[in-house]
Image (cartoon, rainbow, N blue to C red; front, side, top):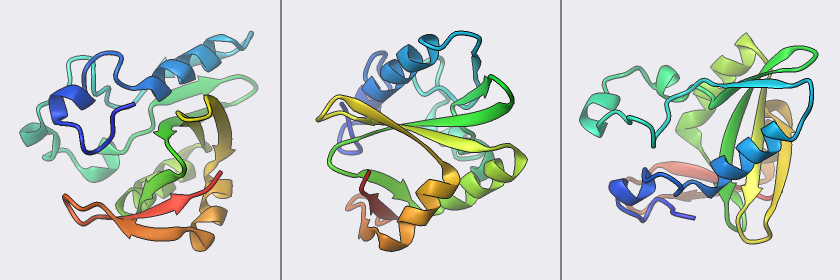
Length: 147
């Protein structure tokens, strides 16, 4: 699994996002269930960063998928090692999308090779008890969410 330390080209290479691959396998394993790619795909005709940052942040933070079973919902895919990193800046976008339609997270543990699915509300409940840290490259704040 690549992380923020890898250069942009490596982070956006096809197959680099292990969590995304596992998420699609998970989605495909459910019968009578439909899913559609929704947000920006970093590996399929990605937008160069100098243009991407001109898009409003709420749209840049669009969930990865729209899923439909009994009702429609959004799904955001995240990979992690040890703990899930949730950027403080992204929380506002997640709140926006969750007001529109329920938002869930598929979180793939790349060390233990297992996944968790949780609602935005459950994730939000974990934020106050999570340790806070910052990325050394851009000094953005993130929460270390233990699942």
